[in-house]
Image 1 (cartoon, rainbow, N blue to C red):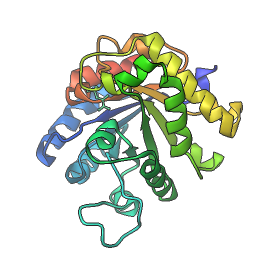
Image 2 (image 1 turned 90 degrees about the vertical axis):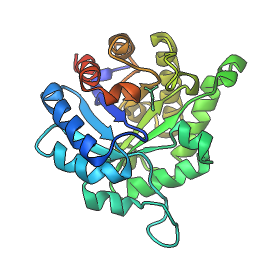
Image 3 (image 1 turned 180 degrees about the horizontal axis):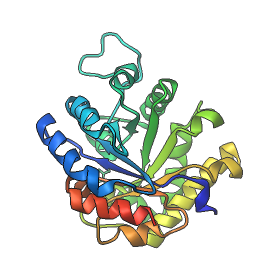
Length: 255
Ligand code: PEP
């Protein structure tokens, strides 16, 4: 595997945290800390904070993402946001299929696929999340499961469109729990995801896809996780709400 073939991407997932004013303040605090990073830096903020985030991030290396997108272009979908609405604001990234959406909001592999296609067709970069529950890990089906989740999410995505897809491996048992996969566990599953992508698109293409790890990545464990050959970045929840911690992770990815 050749890590130099792909971009390291550190993306923060702020989940349901921060008002617009707090967003401006936190991004202003982060900007000097992540300036000059040798990796892509993304912050995925709540919908109502997008405008403030885009304004605050102007002129910096921070890119802004949303945390979900609807698959239809417009219409009678109360409470939903379309991909065109996001790009009109200047949003460049969107998280799709986060386990919190799968667990609490009925997201399925099929809707993840529909959202991924809608995002890509609008020119967004899709951060597609896959990962197993603890019971599934204990059953020994993690690799099969993430391969299936990845293949379904990517159904109908062309090799050209795949250039704007990032896969985030996020073991559900590690999200927000303080339990992190070991660096070897993360690398092993990321390699299985890459193999699944290679099954469909070929090895040369698969080697160019950025595959992140997410699940209690923090300032203390980021360097080890990111040193692994198949871990190309991180999707960061809790630690992305602390400017100093987030910047340490960004620096670890820049090495
Ligand atoms: C996440 O929300 O994607 C995540 C990985 O959260 P945390 O880092 O808090 O586990």
